[in-house]
Image (cartoon, rainbow, N blue to C red; front, top):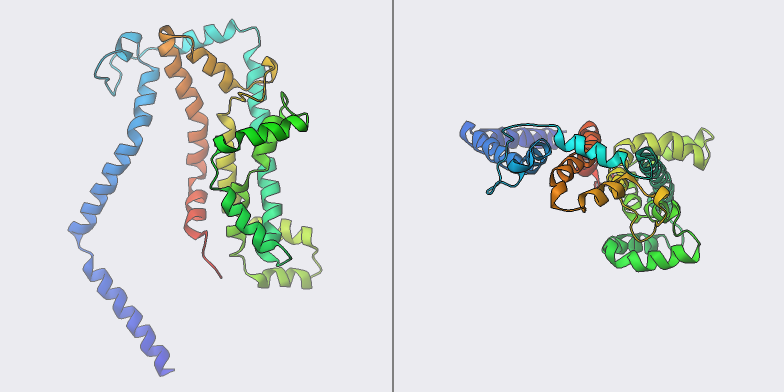
Length: 296
C-alpha cells in the first residue's frame, strides 16, 4: 500500500512540475504558431470561394488577388446555361453520382467491417499473412493498380457499368486496415460476455463491434465519400448516360479559356459537399486517428 501511495504522489508531483513549466508566453506563442498554420491551410479555400464570384477581368489579374472586388453570379449563370444545353439531362449525371457514392460508401463500410472483425478478434491459419498483405497493399498507388483492375473488370464483363467504379471501391484495403486496427482495441471480455448471453457471430458484430467502432466507420464513410464524389469514371465508363456529374463538369472546364469563370464555379460546387460532410463529422475523424493503434 505504501508503494502505491508513493507512486501516486510521484505522478502528482511530476504533473505539477509539468504544469509549472508551461508559461503564458509559451502558450501564446504556440497559439500564434498554430493560427498561422491554420491561415496557411485555409488560404486555398478562401481563394476558391472568391474566385467563383469574380468577373473574368479580376480572374486574369496578375498577381492574383485573394478577395473579390466586384462580386457577380455570372459564372454560375453561365454554368447553368451550358449544362442546360447538354443532350444528357444534368439530373441524370447527378443521379449517377449519388447512386455511385451511396452504394460504394455503404459497401466499403459493410464489407470492410465484416472482413476486419475476424482478422482483429480471431486467430486462424493465414490470418497474420493476410494482415501483412493488407498493409503491403496500401503501398501501391492507384495508378499502379489501374491496369490490373481494368483487366479484371474486363474479364468479369463490368466495363461500362456502375460496377467498374463500385467494385474497386468496395474491395479497397484502406477501410479494412482502418477498421481492423480500431477493432483490435475492443476488449475481448465484451465478446466473451456476448457469447455467454447466447449471441452468435453476426449479433456480436452488429450489436457489439459496430457500435463500439462508430468513430472508425464514420471516418471510413468520409474517406469513401470524398473518393467517390469526385470520380469521373474515365477509362471504365464510356456510355454518356452512366457518367457522374464530375465528368460533365470537367468537360465544361476543359472547353477553353473563355470558360475560366465557369471553371471556378465548378470547382466551388464540387468542393462544397465534401467539405460540409467533413466539418460535420470531423470529431469522429480526430477520435479515430487519436486512438488507432492503441492496444488493450
